[in-house]
Length: 590
Image (cartoon, rainbow, N blue to C red; front, side, top):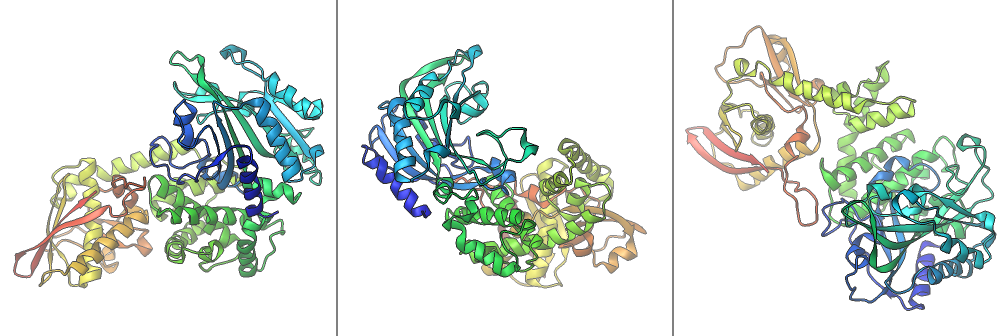
């Protein structure tokens, strides 16, 4: 079957049993500040699961677009994706276990034509310490449906309990949850891999079993004293992965072989000259297919890559996909073609990151000991990507140690700064330092837009704003101001490292380092480059202090109604004349 056929059969099945179809909620939650993305069908329905009446009634069904950031590093096997559609049906205080489980069994056997001999189920074994009983009722219902007892297994809360927060001990007060009964499909064509244990079972990770459905019996709510009370209404919350269910109808354990991925898979095969079935390429194929699909949906909802919240996750998806594209031997932009749209958005991020990726990987390969701190501060290579590469090599990066190094780097950058840089800084508070780095970006952007004859003729930087006086003989046009703002904001988004280097004055001058008019510098000077020294966006004589990466300038951008950060983090508020041939700009960081 195709994805569309499975979706239609599911919705029709539950409509015939009195359910109303509700639309998929936005993938970015509208009124839930606790999470970045909608990760399940029940998430938008929490108020109704807690007892509020739903306008469409007590029986609901839908296919919910979902994204789970926590699964990013799991992608690459036969069944994990970050983005998926979750088929769901809910009972809000209406039917319960004795109706739900037989319906799910009927749908799988009669509608999808799955072999009942391939189905296994699991139930909650209970938690005596928290007063949560063993779910023998669900097990008895499965037996009544001719499910052999040996294919009905019991697991603890880590496997057979569901709440948004996880296991009962992690649930906050007021959070609903309950035991669940999961259905697994066994792909008998897959041989068990002994590295996952001596025997195979439904929760084994070898790939022989795939979870295809989960009926949550939402009957409890966490109390303020840590105990569990019962909800005013006992609810059913079913979720079944559409892609996984489609794969079972094909008796194919690889969800990336369903029709939803056919066109994208063909593009990658054609562009790389490799087959998806190639064992050396299949993991890369899967990561690219999933990540571009997820990124495309995010673009559909208006998200754009950035260094905060949803935009950061989007950027991470694209950059992980680019790395795998390179592994397939494709060195041109390809993600938009794989995704089937959003050419401008993918191309911009792809071109931007390829430069950072290529240089960072070259330097990483030279290292006997992987140094995440140096790779980030010198080359702008993402720390999480370094950690992933290290993990692939059987190593673990101490992220806490890297964080400590970053803090020490910032402190060192700010030490002795007062004596070496007058520069108009009112103080060395964190916000003033952010404005100082933005000042460097602004000066370079002005030179790019207005010409290389532009030079600084004075500055004043406080925690409220930056001010720069510069040589230019006429009023800037609105178009030029917009262009300058765009360049500065782009460099903030590019997460460029800000690097301090001590060198001979003559060497700095040969590099074209910008310096203040009329200032006499010593033989050895300090220069700050935004971007690695050999390919920097900006180089200036300067003693600091500065942020360690331009992404720190965007950390405070305002939240938009869709939950994303505003892309315009730097804004010119005023442009005016100061004297003949001298203009002044006042600008702020949002």
